[in-house]
Length: 217
Image (cartoon, rainbow, N blue to C red; front, side, top):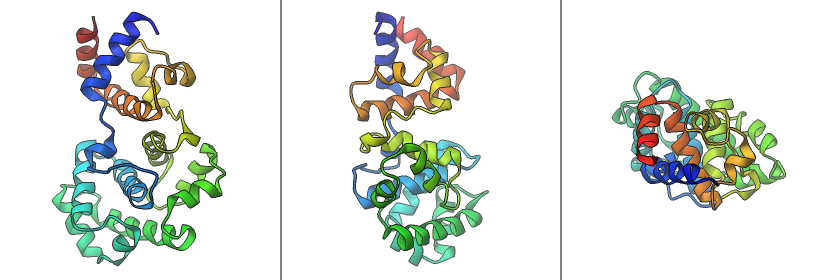
């Protein structure tokens, strides 16, 4: 790693290296409950809505006690709508309430509420995991990427997972735009997930790019 790359990386991780899971109050671990919470967050982040609103809506759902697929399924449709509304997730609240219920149902019926079973069914293969994730209502290619970007902190099988948005952010900062060279800049899978989240933020904002570059030089 060159001096410039290291300086950019240090600023990037220091200022923007919080995973979206951490922002939503999820203590990510290879356990059924936090993995399910991450799935909910990925579903919410998939909509054309700001990341801040999606994170706030996830927090409201979890605060209301809907942190497991069983609790999510057993909540009334209106209760879920109300929790989403408290997070200002209003444009998509009704449709999303239905999708959350159906996704919880699928997870319980097919994988006994445990996403580790989905991973094992896929043999730990990231491409197959993506296909299975996209069977959940509300999770398309974008949602699957979000989930894998964050879960690589605790699922070494899928690391490195650096999708187009992450690589776009890297390019804007003059960092490697190829997955493997970029992944080598991180010292652990946890740092890789933090780097991914930071680069997603960079990819969305020229102001953030300018700020990181100015601070690194």
